[in-house]
Image (tube, rainbow, N blue to C red; front, side, top):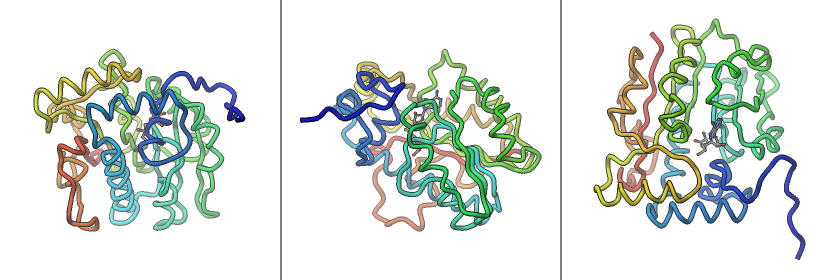
Length: 271
Ligand SMILES: C[S@@+](CC[C@H](N)C(=O)[O-])C[C@H]1O[C@@H](n2cnc3c(N)ncnc32)[C@H](O)[C@@H]1O
């Protein structure tokens, strides 16, 4: 048996969020440590793969809405993940071929796949920045961002399934504010966040303990904690909901339960 080659800069012995998420979505870009971590979480929250798919489906609906009805043609997608069916630029450029997208992630394996993310339409543009959400200024001041996006025109900031990796020590509200403050009026912010609100107290405690054991720092947030991110922003209807319930008309109407998905979302406008 041959050992698969591990790309430079990647530690396969340590679970990583992007590779674990890739496993839940049925992808092949993950290692034994990622699958072991995924199993620890799945033992406490057996519907986690469904939650990953529903999160992704929400992201698709939000980008479709923004590129279509809202007329947004610039996207800053932080916490991109590994390329999967329906990346942000593919969804946006199918509606607006000239749409421009900057992807940002801090996982070296996403960097390895960045070329696959950069297959823009001829009219539009995509770029990839290898950076950490905990250093928002570095992202905003990166030359590739200025080359791809015009920050004097509205941008959609995508923080989809990434804020829950920011623990309280990371100053999640402060870094969120730094990013939003850099966006002009008419911009949008799209956020999803894992929550324990729909779980019983026992399930909640089990999930917190499993996340601690899984080796990936993770912070569930209540609706109130999630709402704090949107202070001063205009929430678009239907406001803060489960990803299952956000404009679900085009999805099969047998919707999963909010507890099985346990993910909050919102799309807000910068006034
Ligand atoms: C669960 S995936 C979500 C992917 C995609 N946004 C989606 O919703 O389908 C989370 C992504 O956030 C990235 N991530 C986690 N912490 C990060 C950080 N501090 N800075 C940048 N990216 C981060 C991970 O590498 C991973 O690719």
